[in-house]
Image (cartoon, rainbow, N blue to C red; front, side):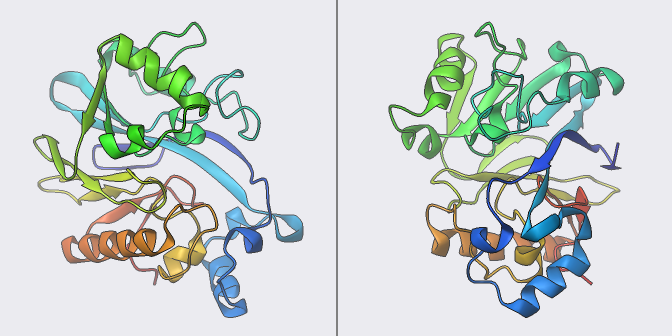
Length: 264
C-alpha cells in the first residue's frame, strides 16, 4: 500500500468511467490531453475511455486509532452499484493493514457521491464503523435531493445512530487534521489537510481534482461539477496552499495515489 508518513492509500476498486474522458472534460485542448496522458498513462483507457482508481485514505492517530477519509464504492448492493465497480475491497485492505473497524475513530466524507460513501453503512443498515463519528459539511447534506439514494442509505442511518457530525466551513478535527471547504464539485465538498511534524504534509483532495488533465491545468472544468467556477477556485486554492507548504496531494482517482501539487 502506498503511504506518505502516517497517510495510507487504500485502493477500494478500479473500473471504467461511464463516459469518455473527453466528454467529461469538454474544455480541454488537444495539447492538454497529450500532457495528461504522459503524466498519468494508467488512467487512459481504450477508445478514449477513462480508467479510474477509487481510493480511500487512512490517517494514523495516537493510540492505534485511525481516521478514514472517504468510504469507497462499497458492497455489491451499495448506492453506486449502477455504475461503480462493486464490491470494493476496503474491508480486506483494512484487515491487511491491521486496522479493525472499531479502530476507526472518525470517517471524513469529502462529499456524498456514491463512490465515496459506499462502506459508510453496512448492507444491514448499520454504521460500518461503529465507534466512528462521520464528518460531513452541512451544506452537503442540505443539498441532497429527496430522491437521492444516499439520503436513505447513508445519511439517515448515521443520523439515527447519533454518529453523523455536520460542520460548517474550515474545521479543526484534532491535532494536525483540518477540514478545508472546497466547494464546486458538490455544494459542500471538503478536502483534508494532514500536518505531519518532521514529515511531509498531505492534502487529501477528494474530488476537487479528478483527472490528470486538471492536475496539468487546474482551469479545466469537469462536466459533473455543480459549479465549475467554484470548483476551479477551490482547485487552484488547494494547489497553491499545498505548494506553499511543500505538501503532496492524496488523490482519489489519479493513477498515482500521491502527487506533487504541480507536475514536473
